[in-house]
Image (cartoon, rainbow, N blue to C red; front, side, top):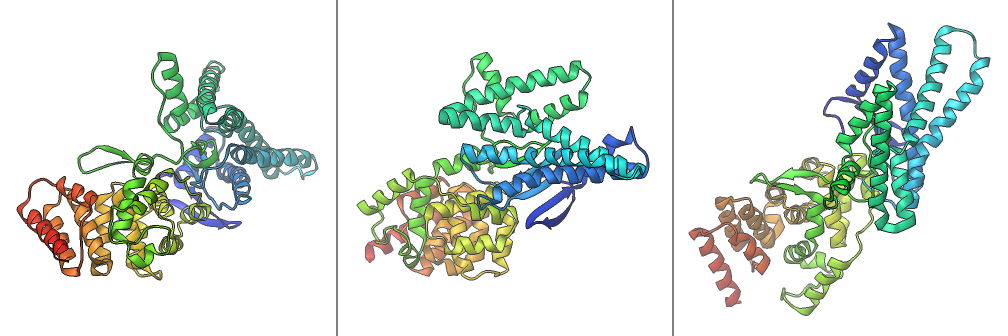
Amino acid sequence: MSSPLPSFRFSLFGFPVSIGVDFLLIAAILAIQARTGIYIAEWVVVVAASILVHELGHAFALRRYHINPEIRLWGMGGLTVYGFVLPPRKSLLVSLAGPAVGVPVAIVVMVVKPWLPSIEPLQIVATDLIYINLFWGVLNLLPISGLDGGNSVISIFEMWMGDRGRRPALILVGICSVVIAIVAVVTGFILLAIVIGFFALMNPEAYLILWRSISGGSRSSIAPGAVRGSYAPQPKPARPTLVKREDKRGHDRSVVQAVAGSRRAFGETYLDTMPAADLARTDAPTGADGADESRDAFLDELESRPKPLLPDVAGMIARRDDPAVGRRLAVEADPLAVLEIVARLAEAKRISQMLSTLRRGEIEDGNVALLKLQIGLHSLGRFEESLTAASMIGRAGGPMSAVLEARSAARAGDRKRTAAALERALNLGEAAPSEAALGDIVRLGPDPRVAELLNRMRSAGRGR
């Protein structure tokens, strides 16, 4: 989640920080009615500093768990983005860390203020620091969807009831959010009502579940993202962020749904495509027969294996350190971790940047990283990007990379490229498409040239 407008970027205490132009503009607009001249700029600076202090509370709490997040100030507030799933107890501590820093700052300034020189600018700065930090901290403790208080309620319920606690917690947060919004309107606190409405658009899960509970509908399947913040949308990271995209036919897809349903398909593609030398670094079978019992056992285990936790990768992606992610991808031996890294890149919309980094040859074993990226992108249904990776690998990927390129081209509806990739696979050496590969290519529909090339592959296989 970020603003499409430009932002100022820098590093603070080792955390990447970006302050969006939209954040500065909204802060200035809020001050225009009551201030003039230099005091508008003073208000904007104090607001940015206060929210940054709040977000640093979240960031330092995350660093304690070996996660290095990114801080963003945009729109109506701040976010601490880290793309990582935390257990409820740790999530609660991270949620409370922001107010636990901001409110004490307000108290300290409140105590010191009487001893400050009676100079108007200095007194105004002190007053604004007290107001913003105190208001921000208390506001974020309210049980509103998207704020630290709402996230804390969900964490407490999950600590108490496990996964079953998420639904009643969301219902409670939804009710509290609606009640607080109504009270804000009745009492004339319109700004708070606008903020809650803004959160509702960006964090709809609580409201959808509340509405479906009232109307007797089904449970929501919307999953929140892994961000922390204040006065800005920042859902509790119980599940990975849903990143919607559309395929060539306009159908909505989701990285999370794709990962959940593609473990076995990814495993099969991984075994079919990766060179034997690389497979030998894992517990994956390396025999030529793709239907043996060891292969099936490996794929069954891959489906049931717990999701890998990759805090180092989350930190690299948050810092936009694409070369580091590429190196990590190249050396990663766990197929499920490879899939997770590619999925996280897709969630963060860093695929094009990663491809550019690998194209420039900035990392050692770049072709290995490209091949893994190609496999992951195909398994996630991102066929055009998989084809881009295949083009970059070229002949270095070997015949099975070319077969995978043909599969992606077939799924993308590109008959010419499907045929060209199959012909290259034949020219590069042994290439026996698996049943999964044939299934992908068959989806292309009847094509004489593709059928001829597949028959040649089958004949070559029988000849050996």
